[in-house]
Image (cartoon, rainbow, N blue to C red; front, side, top):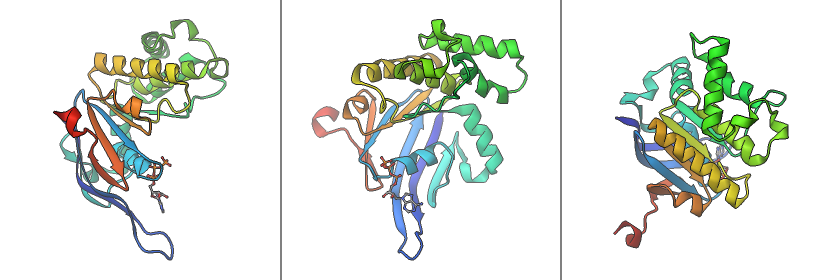
Length: 233
Ligand SMILES: Nc1ncnc2c1ncn2[C@@H]1O[C@H](COP(=O)(O)OP(=O)(O)OP(=O)(O)O)[C@@H](O)[C@H]1O
């Protein structure tokens, strides 16, 4: 099933006393179940703006945006929040963990919003998720006691604990050294593969981008294939 479809998506803003600014310009993108997509772009190319649209946080100014074959515009903002919580997992450069809460509590938090699960069931699911990212021995650790790589693994476990169909990773390795970044990416890929989720990685790092099956470049709001003639042949 096509998870997300963008057709001729534009996003325009009207800064005060200035002409309209086109941040995204005619973006076409289809995301299927299990896809591995990377989007590279320089600072200011429109990556965050696109991410907000892919994550149903913002709507396009014009063009088509569909989630599972239904126009996102036809959902109320409450429905969009529900779809996002249930089907989309976000991984950011800043891990955004709750300080003073253990790794287990951090990962269990999104399950509070999913109905019908007891306290102990939520803890069991969170513990299993932390085990999947290699942190079975860190369940009761506070984020401030964990290394950067471990914190990002906790953030990944938290993003994936509700079994999203789509994982949106925004510079997921930006705060990590090369080796740690690569092992963290391997964990995301592994969990995505196990759960059949689609993964979109937005990055300025060409080595991270290169590992995706489908590669795009974003340049001044225009999205194009990043596969060169030689690679695509
Ligand atoms: N609300 C706004 N009003 C005016 N300009 C904006 C607005 N939102 C974004 N922009 C401009 O649009 C361009 C793209 O912004 P965006 O944040 O999407 O880029 P980015 O690729 O994520 O950059 P970075 O990698 O530095 O975070 C930038 O030049 C930014 O200044």
